[in-house]
Length: 123
Length: 107
Image (cartoon, rainbow over all chains, first blue to last red; front, side):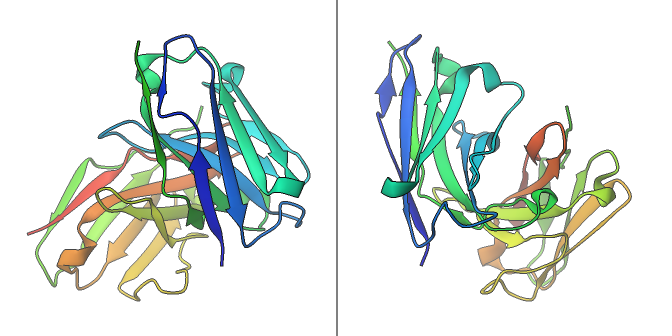
């Protein structure tokens, strides 16, 4: 059974760096083709993909946010960490991590999602 | 960048067929997925690889992808299907792309 859960601050100040951790179970990031992604959703708005890390440490970032994002993995701890620098109130959103099943690159989708964590950016 | 366009809202009567479109340049040459999101819940994938249904997803959910448009079809729509629906694809430059979402109202 695959489960994921995000952890991190619920409130950050403008200009600060956000660090979110996704802790998962039921799969290994050592398995060929597997990935973990981060997606966010501002209140009342659409889903926005942020970053994706693969089993082989290949990393992809949203072109519009890549200068602010870093995604890393700790396979021994079953964790994926996302950092986002220079936070702004417009970054207020629910942040989700999700499991990407082993498929060809073009078949990327997310089949298991965590519950999401609301991060508010305010002074 | 690559963009996916969805209608903001679709309405359907109970028992009828709902169709939600997702448009993008040569989307039919890519693979599309669809997610259902109910208020306060995480998204759930209802279609992947253009037309495949994960286990546990009712047969009334189907989809197609051709030309510039992917379409999610819900046959015999039920009240429980009322939700936001998002299409998603992979692009070689933009990587993971989500559509803007469609609010399905069953009335």
